[in-house]
Image: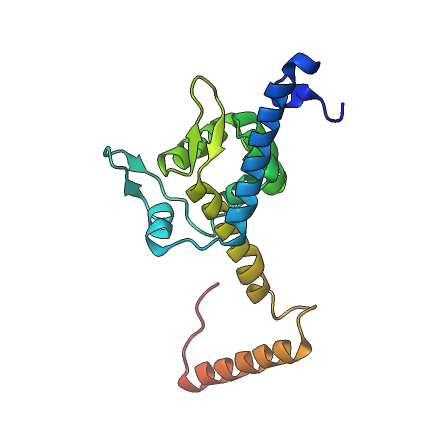
Length: 196
């Protein structure tokens, strides 16, 4: 049903209007916060190092790395960017549904989702709501997700595919010329090509 108060956990009828308005305002606030963080998403160097490398938390626990470029981490960042998760929260089930699609249909088990949720929590990217198996993104978590996704999709992917259409033919020709000159230089020095 469209616009069902049950979607935000409220009952119908006028006696519940105040509760419904409060919950709708909270959903709207989370959505606006998500959009605000997405507009100015710069991951400061210390935060990036803390997330991208294995570290230890303040209480001495090991925080596993979320390495940039790793397909599972990139899919995880993409899943966290969805407004649905930002507004409704993250569960093991909702994360599995998104990750399966983002990983190209590859199997993504309940245990993998649990591990990913744990490492996001330990790195301070999500927080668990009390007495529930529901998580919310922190500001750092949203910045992580948007930064990883934007840099990968808008910078690296186009740069790596610059030698293929629809990139401009002048750039493809320049890369082809560079490849020819590098190959000639290697041949002149008589370096053996490495095994691929």
